[in-house]
Amino acid sequence: MSDDWKRLAAEAALQEVRSGMKIGIGTGSTAEHFVRALGRAVADGLEVTGVPTSERTAALARELAIPLSTLDEIPELDLTIDGADEIDPQLRLIKGGGGAHLREKIVAAASGTLVVIADHTKLVPVLGKFPLPIEVAPFGLGATRKALEAVLTRHNLPATLSMRGGTDHPFVTDGGHYILDAALGAIPDPDQLAADLVAIPGVVEHGLFIGLAGKAYVAGPDGVRTVTAA
Image 1 (cartoon, rainbow, N blue to C red):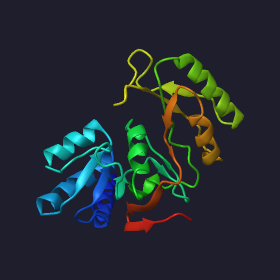
Image 2 (cartoon, helix red, strand yellow):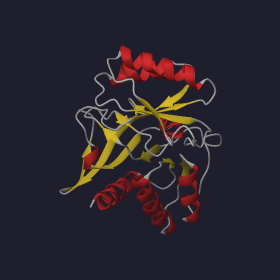
Image 3 (cartoon, rainbow, N blue to C red):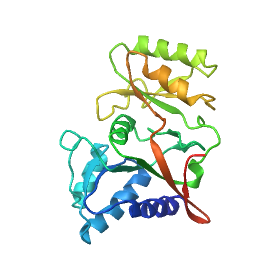
C-alpha cells in the first residue's frame, strides 16, 4: 500500500504544475512516481523545463522525454516537487535517505516554493527518528567527525555517527562526498541544530530542510490531503 500512497501523492502534486513552468524535480521513490506522472503530462502536451536533483532523476527524466536544464542556465525556478523522509507540523523536513540532499536543497532554495509529496507515515510530531544524513568532505574526515560529535553532545543528542556504506566502501554522493548518518531519536530544536551543523568546516550540507517547504501532499488510507505549516 505504501507505494500506492506515494503514487497518489505524486500524481496529486501534478496540479501545481502549469505549462511554461521551470521546476525542480526531486529524488527518491516518491519523486520517481512524480517524474513518471510528469512524463505522461509532457507527452500529452504540457510544456515544462525540469532541473533534476540527481543523476538518477535526470536519467529517468530523459527516458521520458522531459526537457531538462540546469541552475546555471535557469537560476530561478517556479517550484520544486520532492519527497521527504520525515515531515513535522511546521513542515520542517529530514531529507537525504537517497543521498541527494545537497542538490535537493540547492534546487529547493532556488525555487519559489518546495512542494513535498509523501505517504502519511512520513508525518511525525518531532523530527529525528529517521537518521539525519550529514554530507561531509572526505578530506579531514576525522576532524569533521569530532566536531560533529561535539555539536551533538552540546545539543544533548546521541553522538552516534555511522558512515553510510561502511568505512571500507563508503557511499559517495553525486558531488563526491561521504554521508555520516546520525541516529538522534528526537531533535528538540531543529533550527539551531541546522545552523550549528552547517557551521562546521568539512560539513557540506545536512538533511534538515528548514523554512523551505510551503505545502505537502500526503496520501494514506483516506486518500490525499494537503498539509500546510501549523
